[in-house]
Image 1 (cartoon, helix red, strand yellow):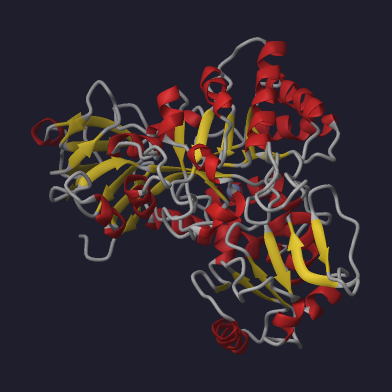
Image 2 (tube, rainbow, N blue to C red):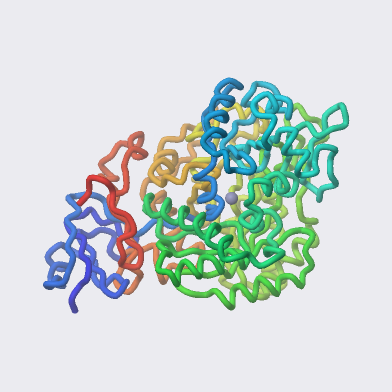
Length: 554
Ligand SMILES: [Zn+2]
């Protein structure tokens, strides 16, 4: 057999326990055909073989991004970025420039707006002083709060308040009008729609399908967002993307992109189950799993939100928030009904992924998975919990015993990467810091681990995230929650593949598996932990096809 592509001269970390290290990898027909020494693998070279000398760089299985929002991330790449910006003057200047550059936009949207960007609570009057004659809205970094100016509130029918489903809120000011702060997806959905992105937001907001079929032009515009997201993934070495919001529409767009030859990462898209849906709507989840089950695009899991986020204090806690007596928020699903839903999803053979941030939400979610196991009997279900920002110690062994994947983000702990430390004092009692953002503790208890960015919530950059996983300091006197470098790399490769039942396809470099690889632009093991984030991606290969080549490499 002749190889089509060989990468040699590499420090290959295979993530395959039977052969953890090698020098070269050969690919033919989209699959890995050999992993071994340079001499062994070069025996498969022929006149038609493309040989790439890695020059001692680290070669890994292509990264598996276990939790991102592919279409929304792609869409946001075009919006105003306020990440790291503080103060009214800076935001005003940024908006003025953006508004002038985009006279065609119906609404002006900004991302990455810090809670307290103007010091005190952000109000619609603050935003009116920035721009009053066009609708503007600012999204928080966690994507769970939006602040809107008066025109945006007026045009979306929210200025005088609106009835919202449980957990979603149009915050009202003392004068009986909306303050400008909108908490959670359904509250800010109407404002987001002003920017003309209603179809793109359905997957995360309601899980519904577009009410009217999109026109060819609308589909092309929506596909462009996914394509931009896919290109962003390829640049960062990602060959598998688990997009954590979804509907059939997203799958259809991605299937069209696949048919056009543009699917540069394997994509997995869930059915999004909302608390107000009837159990019968799970038929749609089963249909999505049946109709999309390929090696490049599939469904097969159900996503749910059990709570909100800590900064807006919508995460459901087992005790009251510090300084806010009587407030611990609430689970978005009634716990007994949630058990029924879990049992039904599990009975259908589908996987479950639940966003659970507070320790109360984590407990209700574990209770649901446990109920499914009791009612249906054990199976290789691999249900997972997304985020787990606070957990009660009593639940750690339960998580492990049920084999629940801890799908966590090294970039999320305050102080670890881009999120500020003041969140810790604001939302966690000091004596609970030891239970916040656990990673190593969960792994040592035996829980499978998958890493992700939750892009666009944080930077998608895998190398920066790896750096955060290796350099994160323990919270004030608490235990060290770093995992070893190999465990971190595994959580971004084989661990992520296992978490979606794809260990037989990707996440490991061994013959027979897909030709999904990433060549990091340096020697990962020889690089100081504090410098890992500076390493670029030299080459990304998905299914044997080069999807990214770094500037200055080859
Ligand atoms: Zn997410």
